Image (cartoon, rainbow, N blue to C red; front, side):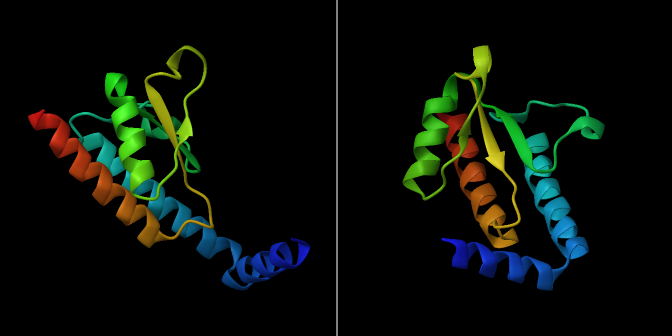
Length: 120
């Protein structure tokens, strides 16, 4: 386990902190841009100035179970919401280990689901 951690740290060091930050900003923007246009999902934090770049909280309302089950079946596990909002929200991790391609695939799935929820 320590060997793997050392390899990951070495890889991230080679990329450099600025590239890691830029990638995180790009991925967060992709996710928030989708959420700002989605019909059945929305960003919990409405003001872009206060939105987290690393953990994105999504309001799914009564469709939460449908969303998380669909994502799980397609290889994406998202975090649960907290407290009284636990049954209506989920969280998307935007970490350095997640590639831009991963985020694009997640958004494609969410877009597909958003369209399906519109007609149901």
